[in-house]
Amino acid sequence: MTEYAIQANEVVKRFGDFTAIEGINLNVPKGSIYGFLGPNGCGKSTTIRVLTGLLSPTSGSVNVLGLEIPRQSELLRLKIGYMTQKFSLYDELTVEENLQFMGQIFGMNRQVLAQRTNEQLMTYGLDKRRKQRVSSMSGGQKQRLALAAATMHNPELLFLDEPTSAVDPENRREFWEQLFDLSSQGTTILVTTHYMDEAERCHRLAIMEAGEIRADDEPEKLMQHMGVNVVEVKATNLRKLKETLIIRPEIRSAAQVGVRLRVLINKEIKNPIEWLKTIEPSLQNAELVVARPSLEDVFVTVTGKGRQ
Image (cartoon, rainbow, N blue to C red):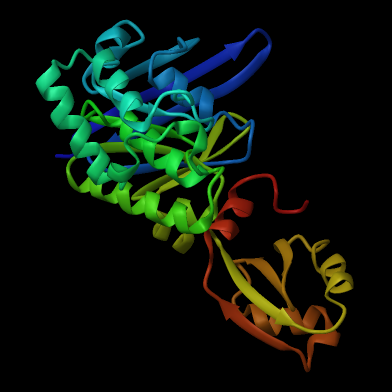
């Protein structure tokens, strides 16, 4: 039987007349990396704030690590880590001082604090920078420090709100290796992102739009069951071809990728390549191939972005 770190049922959050999240349901297995993918303003950060008890839901029920939220949110704060998009540690303190400060907040005694600080400095490659002021660190170094600080107290559950938005691809890859290490040790991780490559790394993924969860499954299954075939077309005048194709109701979206047009065609069309050649005679001698679905294809299929 699967144990869940987070269970949310029909959760709604309104701010006056504005509905930020609309009837979401979540079951996040313990020890998993669960992703929220969606554009800015879709409700990802609001959802995290409700799950951590920082905001009270307008309606619905939330249970996190066996605690009823928001009623027991004070108890929850000792069990979770939270890393925000914006770097929120102290620039004028050293690396070591920031970690010690976080440990003191969680009530560590001097001996435990010293041991845990050293462990974190080694784990996140910051040992040689322990005396460096944070203000002089690079974005990637600050990111590692923020993760070290968020996990100082060995949280059971880690919330990461777009944690890699300000770092380069190499640091992002290294950051995700550290997340997999934490997951393998039993830490449950909930991470919001708008990067498709990061979303594919998650064990399970929810795609959000306008406060609603449009899809929720393992990334590979989402790609398998998206209800469209993907055909890549290499031809001349792709911009005009796109305008011609997207008016067809059978075509979910078309987007140019380099020298090819990536066309998403409803699965009801049994032979999509022959069908395309039939509806568009100019493609008779063009290069057409069926392509593997991507998470971006899933995203445009389940949200309202398919025809924009």
